[in-house]
Image (cartoon, rainbow over all chains, first blue to last red; front, side, top):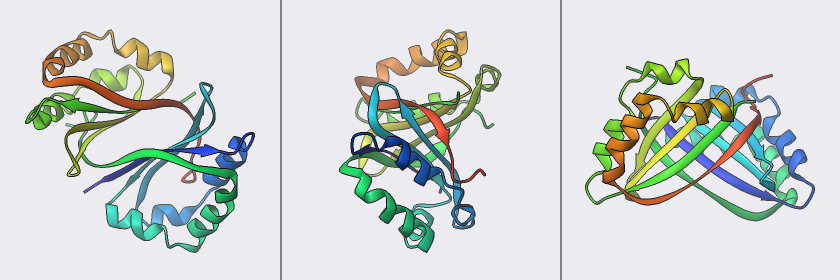
Length: 100
Length: 100
């Protein structure tokens, strides 16, 4: 069942664009691992926050992706730029009004 | 710029599936109004919560969609089934590791 992982990452002051650059770096392994959608963004209202919305073929595919060397590398690279303050939620997709 | 609207809706006890049914009802007007992605779901960990992740061509397109009769009707239908407790965030998409 399609799995959604949605969250916010608080960055150290002035490090937002660096975190966005790490998270948006092209990574074909994500699609191979079952990632259907991965959108990274920002908001003027929260200048030290990075927003991430992910859709995966399953919760297990998402979990397994965290062990990919490319993903572990990105996490290790981003971690010093974050405060550790994170928020978000995970859910199973039930449907969409865009589909019949 | 692509706009993301992500949120949770707390439902009255036992009304979660009714709210999911309203929000996932096929609505071609959404795509015409600039909706790129609209995923509705649930989580076993929060039995009275409905999760929604939306992507729109712009914040303005999302705002304008709230005036569509079909959307106003769905909101009016869902409202009595909700507690009014909502959470979430909005952001502008900067990029994706799934794209070059």
